[in-house]
Image (cartoon, rainbow, N blue to C red; front, side, top):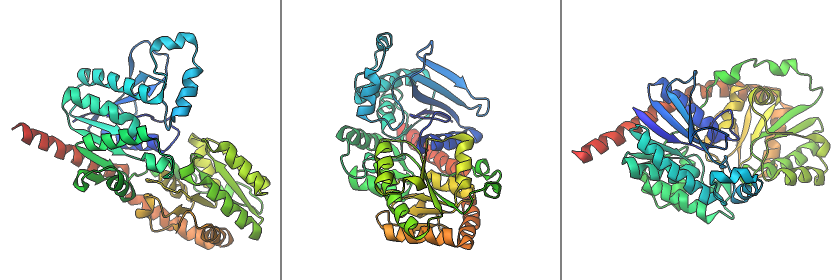
Length: 410
């Protein structure tokens, strides 16, 4: 089976969970014999229209990089700033001056690729790739899968959604032969706002390669925190991730227990706001900002923490939760998240309930036995959350679409 897959980020050049999910999905599919051409917009100085790179680790995955200004989680404002910063010599590449225009340019390149690359299925990931997928389908007439990892309603926190992005998302799920949602939480959002038949949507929860985070689970014992316990927020600093709620809870915790350090790890459009909020709350000396982390630094900071908190306002899934548990660190997560559907051995709270969030943080940092219990049981629980099982479900979806296609032809 050959899949033409469109994405907007892929490790190691990813800034969020979408890249992590794309890696997990493609690796697991390739291990099951699926051949994947992964199309990725990248602003690279490459000699050809797109570059074909064959990974030694994943021999059945070919990554084709299209020369484009598009990057992950990009807003119209971010794109415009990047376009205006270009040197005159770069403008010969015919980049569009606005985000939606550049997505449409990506879509036209997708048509060319669909003519040249043999494939049985087209698989797209989130809104930037939905138009390219639709254009590729027009050329090849192959089944189209739209994989929804997040929606514009999630990213905007339900306020100020970009109508153009919303329209593209709606078109993408309506034109698809099958929609994959990362959670029931996400499926319900699609049903409520995008006018799609429920039978068209299948749920494939995200997963984790547990062993990649399991090394040196005794790291905490090798690090001297003195009397302080570490409470961690790790994610993009954007409205829907709830970093402001994290700091409000931090303020209340510190009023009762001074021996806590709060780490904020990540970057985003709320960077300055969150730094100023910590100062305004009078807790700047107890809040450490690390910026965006990846690789070994990411793994170490999970292990340093006594508790990881994901206070998202609207979280389609939340892969960081699984990474924290795999690192041996207990988690406190928002009930407004997809991952809360599949985890039992964790603490859960409504994102807006600062008092309850505070009480649960204090329970863990004041009672080591609770954290150890959550950690031990959490590690056992995520054993069943594997990318291998996710890939099996996706392959079944592919098979169903191909059988339906064959039946319709006959």
